Length: 221
Image (cartoon, rainbow, N blue to C red; front, side, top):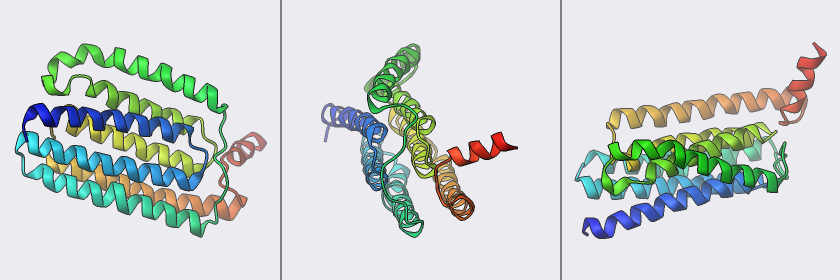
């Protein structure tokens, strides 16, 4: 396959990642959030494999396989298991209504592209625009974290931020050292385990994963 064929596919996958970021921002069902996160991880694995074909870097194939294993399969499965063990059901509670959140997401995308535009000249021509998409996805994930009230949905936002940073490092710059990718993946996995313990402690003490109980506790003190 030639560069003329692969680059448009890579750009399509970048647009798909941004669309999934908006879907995560709009989604209100907790289980659906884990499914969307798995789709985003699978897209990251595919985009990394395409970069491996474009650059001829064999280590990127290892990275693509690890991304598929960790970000598309293992981490979403762990989250799904946590939700079942904690018996968490129902909708995600937001601090803003859905319409306001989506409009704010659009503003974030415009800001991200404006911020990334001066840096485009230092990147490969084939990846122009992808840094803006990666930054927009990162900021949308951050917006998701600060507009959610339940700890689980905030952790999904944190993992989506990690995915966006990973996409920026691989697709927007056409590859990064494998040791860095392994470090990022391990950090995300360790962070998820820590958050899992945190979930159980919150549930045990407050019988809910809604973080407004922690705010009330601080106010009482």
